[in-house]
Structure formats: C-alpha cells, structure tokens
Amino acid sequence: MLVFFNLRILNRNEIDPLDAKSIFHSKHKEENNIDPDDGNSKLCGACNVPIFSTPFKATESGSGYLHDQCSNLPIDSDCSDLHPSLEPLEKQPNLEKSNCSHCKAVCGDVLYRCRGPGCGFQLNVTCAWTVKIMHRSHDHRLTVFRCSAADASFACCACGTGHRPGLLWVPSMPLVYVCGPCGFWLHPHCAALPNVIEHQSHKHPLLLNYGIRSSTCQCAICGEEVSSWGVYSCTMCRYYVHIMCAVTERQSFESVLLGEAFGDGRIPGLVHFPVPDEYTSIVRHITKNTPTTSDVKLQHRHPLTLHHDYPIYKEADDEVDRPPTCNACVQFISPPFYSCSWCPKLFLHDSCARLPSVLRQNPIAIPLDLIDLKTIESTTCCNRNTNAFTFRRHSTNMDVMCALMPTSITHAAHAKTHVLRSSASGDLEACRCCGGLLSGVSYKCGTCRNFSIHGTCARLPATVRHVCDPHPLKLVTAPPPRRQPQTNTIYCDACERGLDDARWHYGCAECKQAFHVECVPCLDKLSLVKYEMVEVSERCHECPLTLVRVHMVCGRQCGVCRKGYLGHRDSTAFACFKCYFSIHVSCAFTWKIEAIISRINCL
Image 1: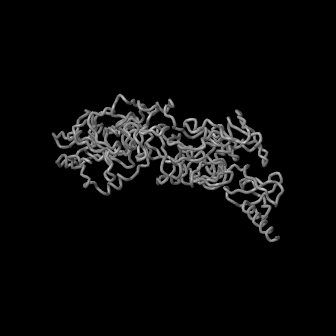
Image 2: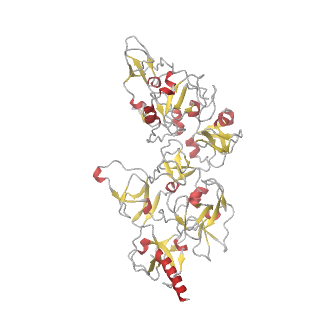
Image 3: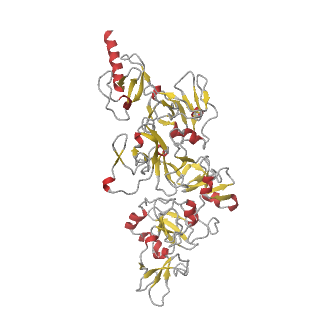
C-alpha cells in the first residue's frame, strides 16, 4: 500500500498532465557513460542529489558535476506557497553552506534566497524547483521529493518492500524518487545499492539487475519467487537473490567496485566485444567465459586430426591462398582446429568440435538440439541462410553463434563498466549499429538505457580484410565530427551506394575508403553458407557444379538460358571454375524439372 506524504506537492492529482507527458515519459537520448558506482556516489553540485544515470555536465572548475537540468536553472523562483512574499527568490551561490529554511537540509552550491530586506528565507534547489533525474531502474524521469523518515515507509518498486530506518549500505537520506504516471516509487537506499556484491551464499559475484521479474525465478535464500523489479543475479548461473535477502545483513556480503571486478576478471560469463578480427572464433571467445562446451568431441566416421597452425587452402577460382571455414560456425578456421584426412572439406574449431548435443542455457531458455543441416535453411534468430550446424527445437532454428550468446556482455563502443543485458525481441528500440528495431538475440544497456544492439551487430569484429583495400578495415562506431552540408554524402567503395556515417561501418583512414557492413563478404547475409559443401551434378555439364556468390561469375553467361548475372550481391549461382562454366540457381532446378518431364514423355 502506497503512503502519501503530508506535502501538498505530492498530491498526484496536481501533477500537470502536459508535464507528465512531456517530461516524465520522454526518454532522454543523451548518454551518461559515467561508472555506475560513481553515479551512485557523486552528487550534483546544485541539488545535492546523486548523478545516477542522469545526463550531466562538468562544473566550470571541472571538479564537480551538475545534472543537465541543474546546469540551466532559472534566475528567479516564485515559491509563494512556501514563502508568501511579494519578492521572488533569487538564485545565489551558497558560499556559507547554509541550510534550507523549508526542509532544514544543507543546500548545495546553489540556493534561492529572498530579496526582501532583512529576510533570510532561502530554499535549496529541490524545494525551489521540481528536479527530475534518470535512474537505471526505470525508463522515465523520476521526480525528487523530500520527505521525513517516518513518511518513507512506502512499498519501493525496486525491492518490493517497505523500508525501515537503519539500513546500512548508504547514509539515511530524506528523499524519494517517483514516476507519477507509472506509479513507480524508488527509495534512496535502493537507488544507491552496490552494483556488485560478493555474497556468502554463492561462489560468483552477483550483479544488480533490474527487470527480471518472473514467476519462474526463485530467490536462492528465501525460496520465494522474484516478483520485485530489482534482483541480484549471477551472470553464469541461474542464481537470483532478492535485494533485501542479499543486503539486509551486513556481514553476509561485501561490496565490489565494478571497475575492479571487470579489471580482475572476477565476473564469469560476462563476454566482451568486439573480437579483434574475422579470424577470431566467436564460439571460442564466448565459451572460454561460459561453461557451454562439452568435454566430449563430436563423433565423426573418420578420425579427426588436431592442428595448432593456420591451414593453407587454395581456392580453384582465383588461385589465392585462403583459410577454409568451419563446418559448424562458418567462420574462418584458426588454430587449434580439427580436420579429417578422408573428408577434405571438413574443418572444425576445437570449441565447435565440443558443442553440446543439447544446449540448455541459451537466449530463448528452452533446450535446443544440435543439428548438422547439410541443406541450406533460414535461421529464426537472425533470418540468414546457412547449411552449417544449428541448434533446433520445433520451429526454432538458431545458428551456433546466436544460440551461444550469453545473457550479459560489454562492448567497447559503449561505456566500459556498463553491462548490456539480453533483451526481449518485442522492445521498440533501435539498434545502435544498424538502426533496425531489436529482434532475435538483442541487448540493452542496464545502466543508462540509451544503448541497444542486435547480437549479430555486437559480434562484428574490430577489423576485417576486404579485397578492395590493402589494409585492415576498422569498425567505425561513432559518427565523425560535424561537416559542412555539401560534404555530408559519402559512398561505399564496394557497392558505390550512399553510406550513412551515423551507422556503424568499416573504413580505412589511410586510403579514405568506407564500406557498408553488409558489403563485407564474411559478414553479409550469405556469410553463414559454406559454399564448397553445396555441389550438384547437372546433365548440362559433365563436372560437378559448386555453389558460389554471383559476383564471382559476373560478366559470364548462364550455360542454360544464355543470360547474364544481374542479381543482387546476396544472390548465388552454380559454377565450375575448371571449365569456366556457370548457371543460374533457378536454371539448375528448371533443367531438372524439364529433364524429368522429358523422361516421362518418352515412356
């Protein structure tokens, strides 16, 4: 049951609907990349309220912080309900660390003082104005209200309980944070909870998380379901603890700074992206931090040989030495890896060779079976075609990289200590990389709530190679400085179409070239197809035909219909490079159908 304070300003009926719509429910898209621990401890110089996740500005001296709202306070304040006077209150610096005449709290560096002669009435910023902050527990701005300790016994939406005086993790603060339209109330104790704790009940550090709230999760200490909005959880285990169960007894836990926990690698299951280049195995990168792989190697009808050096593989079409791709994840092979002397097209990363037959911990939380497709099918997670290994159950079909993505990641394109957590695909959030709405395996920042990204976009390597540039291309994740309007348009050097530099792309500063992500062959929609595994025998040609990308046969004519190849870059064809022969994929199936009809007519 919510308790309304004995303050006129807290009457919800007096909240301006226009103010509620325009301020409470407008998401601030400015990023706050401050460390969450610093956000809890560092106070705004004007209002003395913690910075939290609120966009802020540094003070002129550079030694302090100001909320974005507090950095632009009006000169005068008309607080006639608190100080009936004809004179307005004037903003002045608080040089003497004076107390507020209304709430008796020490004012910040700024206060509002009556201009009337002989009147010493003064207010701090939170009493003079409605201050709104951002906190990672809620999507909207929270209004700061001052209250007495006796009044602060409402049900907090973070922990789901009423609070009693004397909680130990922060000093007592006569404040409450409220989102009126949502009915969201946050106690100052829960607003400043430690972000990481080491608890005596679990072997791994526990991270503070908001938004789990599920009847399928039970508190490991009290056994009751996790129905509150906030919870401490383990990034590796399905281990959840109520906030109050975790921190009420001071001797049962120890606070850990996020920066120290990340730097020491003390948080298992937390995977950092991006990987260095396209030769880095994503499966190996994920499984070294998560207990996903099995100790049993995949069964094959022939003995598999383990290699510790890079392989050399010669493509017949261009006589260029290229590494082969893994049959499980279709990434370039890197050591250590397995091969089969009897099956020259079989290659497996060491981590891919130990994929579990049943994957129980995955983004959709249902057991998935490992399948070797053999044929080209579309995945349900990222809508890409593949003929490699997938994890499947009923209508769900996930490639191995999407299926193995962890629940929590960090990314170099965002704040160092901000954890990105797996997000429901129905969230109407735009991906920071490609601009598309979140779908499939996706992540949102649990701290500032202003960074969202697809799982496939998060896996983009920091550098890639492209045939059009002699240097490694670097992933560009930040828009360039503002340019003159006439120089805004840039073009992709692969497809020669316009490139939006506000989206992530690859570029070479030395050659001044830029490329769409989808114009890099090892990252596009056909990057999960292992082409050399798809061969067909056609009566129109005596040699087996291998599936290839259309750009490899551009300038030729189809051996069946005699037409050229004008397909999109994501199109395919069948080719025999030994004989310089190729046909459309559609012509291959048409030829087979016509041959069957011809045989039937001859009967």
